[in-house]
Image (cartoon, rainbow, N blue to C red; front, side, top):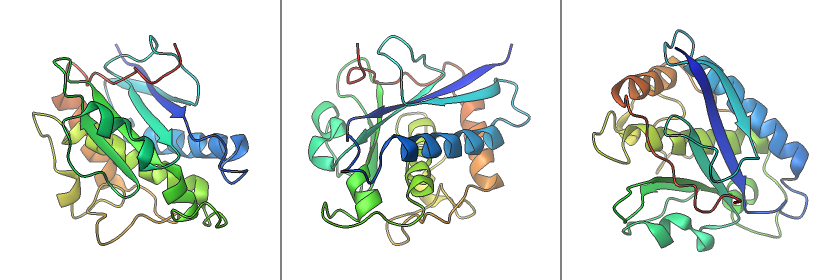
Length: 204
């Protein structure tokens, strides 16, 4: 029986002095909802999508996603909870180092919205750009941050959001295409038990 795909966004960055306040966050969530409605078209696993900036530790299941929105990577949960590795410029995804092997995804809002400078104005299309970075990290979450690797996100040649971003950063004008959608569908099909999400830094 099909179920609702729930994406829990956890804001730990405040409003960046008004540059990413509640109205921006809601537009970002609506954009992500549209993206993932494209993902689940024709999916037997999911029939609807909900994206929320709410939620508590006990809410997400292994069939949902959780992504933390941090101010900068200095507050990285991945750095504290995983076994190391280099953090991404705009976000990171890794499994916890403990036996539970929970998946952590996070994005760094100041880097995305203000190019890393707390004094600068917001970039154009900020809501879509944050949504793009979140979707990219959720691609890692589902596809390649733990075994079995379904698909290497940074080696996808046809994706717009799921691609190598080291030399070609995501833009606010980018939007996912059918290759991105198909990769997520493949991940949902291959990971029949879901992917357990780290919820320890969500409100209790």
